[in-house]
Length: 191
Image (tube, rainbow, N blue to C red; front, side, top):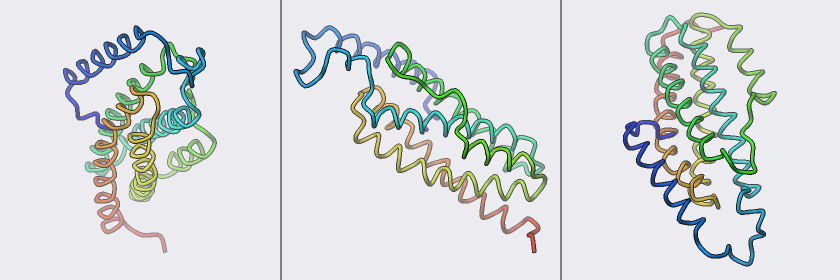
């Protein structure tokens, strides 16, 4: 999620998106292959991406808030970045969906909630290891989803969101892999 983009750049991108959307709406007729009601709807694949991105983002924020209590300063720093970047991306995604015939999930799915509950039950080095391994797995799964949406999303704003956010997801993935190796190497292990 390319949330490294400065606030000014973010505002410009939003204004550009709004202008492009307004210009697109002023064109005469949608292509014959589109029904008039689909102009405000997302394709099934786009909606699936919205659902996955929203749930994944919520999970990253909630897990990051748990990890801000870590005793490892590197884990805390990573967690704070996850909260900041994913919260900003979630807000951007909500803006894209607002006014459209679509929904953004408001709660975690069962799998993510169970993982969050498990993380909440852990402490110390065990928490750090599990949290970082979870972040590796989560970002390893998210990066291909964002890359695919960046190429195939049918909604131009959603496609641009996926393209812009992909770099941040990849940065998070690299950081998570590095820290997971560090926490596994430095922490006590279960035997």
